[in-house]
Amino acid sequence: MHRFVKFRSLVLWCLLGFVASWLISCNPRVPTASNQELEFWTMQLQPKFTPYFTDIINSFEKKNPDISVRWIDIPWEAMESKILTTVSAKTAPNVVNLNPNFASQLASRNAWLNLNSYISPEVKRQYLPKIWQASTLGDVSFGIPWYLTTRITLYNKKLLSQASLTTPPKTFAELAEFAKTFHNKTGKYAIFVTFVPGDSGEVLESLVQMGVQLVDKQRKAAFNTPEGVAAFSYWVNLYQNELLPPEVLTQGHRHAIDLYQSGQTALLSSGSESLTSIEKNAPTITKVSGAASQITGKTGKKSVAVMNLIIPRDTNKPDDGIKFALFVTNTENQLRFAKQANVFPSTVKGIKLYIEDLKQESDSTTLITQTRKVSAMQLEDAEVLIPSINNINKLQQIIYENLQAAMLKEKTVEQAVQDAADAWNNIASTMNNR
Image 1: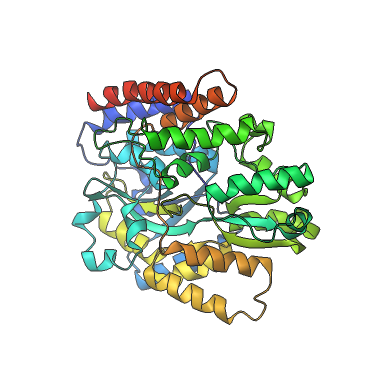
Image 2: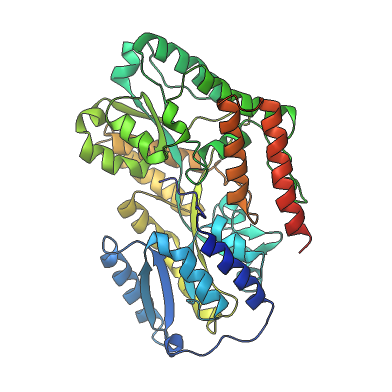
């Protein structure tokens, strides 16, 4: 599950501006009927994980009889608007499940509790350091890491053999050669990677993996460089040489899964959670699939997606909220959830125990076990590659739209890079002047 949060609705950004005006005020949280309970929001985890949360909430309440927890599960597509609305009205839940990219939009407006005043350095060190850093803006920590997902490369062994290939590519440079050989020998495409502006951030992450710095300390464009031109050229050349499916310009990441499970592509870059649908929809493809580490660039960087727990600044129960969030994200509870959800824990000890458990599994040849092992082994060095800045979705949109223009020969690569930098700098200037 590679979840890069998408901001598609103009309504959301109107609400975000509304939030900014509300947050100027430092008034205490407005009392509501729900203030008698600790309100906890998650994203689309019912009904599958209802037994899990019922159990840990009961366990927490037994250990803390003076705290009552009310769990509310919000549909994925509704979470952004609901949080924006409740934060502006100072009625936000006491603990909420978000990801760093969206949470950082409001962290810059002082919406969340500064955890530095509540959580000791010793407790912070229990979590993977690069993962903790993902929920930090400047020197302020605003989120407690929860579960993780990281991309891997699934590959169809049968299709590889048809092209006299034995192993999947490890780097983007290898991918270009692999894609050419595979297409020439089979007539099929090696991989599908989406350039739809509001969809996956995989291509944006690939620029960082290729050595491109997206923004500087002033949040101005830093990608108008030889490295940026080279990274743009890489994807433009693949497309213009007909080594990518033409629908990469119009179809999202879901199409990549569809193509792979129908045997139309040799590689799939996705999270291990995609295996559930592939095993169900395409058991014959599953049988001939293997798992390898995610494709990266010259930096060797590997990406990870993070889900964390946030405590709003205006909460009337900061200590209770932090106590509950630390309970949910402790190693024991994270391990239980990780195994049920096919994700990974974010604590140092949790990852170590997870890998040890994987080594003990008797059926280590199954694809799901292979995938878990590959994913887990990447986590120690994985990091969130996309910076936590305002309007990061706009940066992705600008870069993708200019990449598309270059792919379609409407612009040169150099012009596309320059135009993207200029468009972003106009937005950055507005943000910096606020």
